Image 1 (spheres, one colour):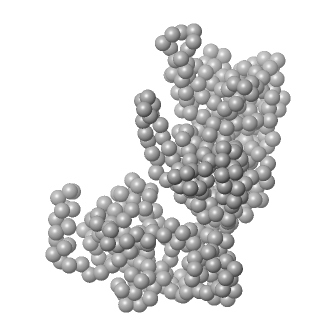
Image 2: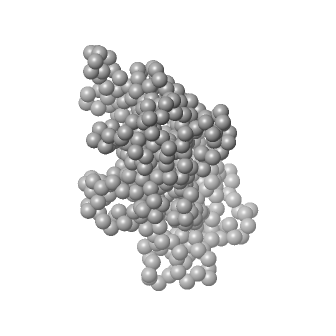
Image 3: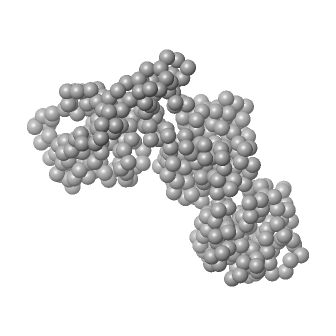
Length: 434
C-alpha cells in the first residue's frame, strides 16, 4: 500500500471518514474482560495499544469486542511491530475515564477499533516500515527529563507514590512468578534489577504479561531503558525504593539519546571489568551449608530452568585448565576494594560504585584462569576458580576473571580430592534418579 494513503496522527480529526493510519507499536496492555451491561451473563473484552508515526506524535488505540476477536487481535502483533489501522473511530480523549489508565500522548484524540467497522493488520509497505522502525528508540518524554537511580535513592520516601521517568541499565532479569489470587484470578510477576553509575541495584517490577514479554527479551548488562511514567514506591520489607511498570508506562529499549549512549558505555565497561559480578557476591555462600549433589548434566539443566544463582556439589575431573591464553588475559590487575579491572599505571579506581572512591588506591595482581569440569554425563565449561580456593587446589595464587561469555557461569567455592567411598555413595544415589 502506498505510504501517501496514510493519514498522519498529527492530522487526525473526528470528522474524518474512513481514516487509515500506520504506526509502530510502542506500548500494549493485557486483554481484560468486563460484564456486558446490555447482555446479562456476557462479557466484553478489550485491550489497548499505543502507536507512533513520527518523533513527536503518538496516539492510544482501544479495541473492543468478543473473546475470539480481541484475543486473536492481541496475539497478532507485539511491541515493535508496524501496523496499519483502517477505519478506526476518532474520538476525543476522556481524561476522567479510560484515558486515565493509558500512556500520556500529545494527540487530542484516541482511536477506537471494533470488529464490525475496523481492520488492524501488520504493515507490509517496506518504505513505511523503514520510516517507522527508528521511532521505537525515541523516548516518549524529553530525553533529559528523568531521575537517575541515585536521585531516587536520595529522595527516598519523598518519592513514594510518585510517577517519574527513569534512565537505567538492566543488571539482571529474575524468574517469572505465577500465582492465583483469592478470587481465582491468575497473575504473574517478574522483577528486574536496574543499575547506573550512581546505584548498583534497584528493583523494577512488572505485572502485565505484555511488559513481561518485552523485558524477557532484553540482554542484561547490555541494555539501557528509558522508562516513562514508572511508579515509585517504598518497600518496607526491603527498606528501600522500588519502581513498578503500570498501564501508563512506556519502555523505550536502548534509546537513541546522548544520555543513554553514555550510560550504555558505562554499563559495557562495568560488565567487562567484572565489577557487577563482584557486586553479586556469589562466593559469600558458606561452603558447609551446601549439601545438594549434582551431575554435570543436572547442573546444566537446572541452570537453564532457573536463571537465579544456585549452589551444589559435583564429583568431577578437571578436564581443562586454561594456561595458553596471552599474558594480558592470564595476568590481570584489579582494584583491591571492588575488584574492578584497572591498569598498573592508574592512580585511582574508575569504577563509580567503588566503596574506596576518595581513599588511597591499591591494587592486586593475579591470574585469570578458566577450568572445565567433566564427569560421566558431560562437561561444564569455563568455570571460575577464585582465590583462596585456587591456592589450595593448585598451590599458587590465582585471581580468576569475574566474567565468562558462556551461557552458564560456574564459580568454584571449594575444590579438593574426593574420598572414593564418598563418591561411590553419592553417585549411586544420582544414578538411581536417572
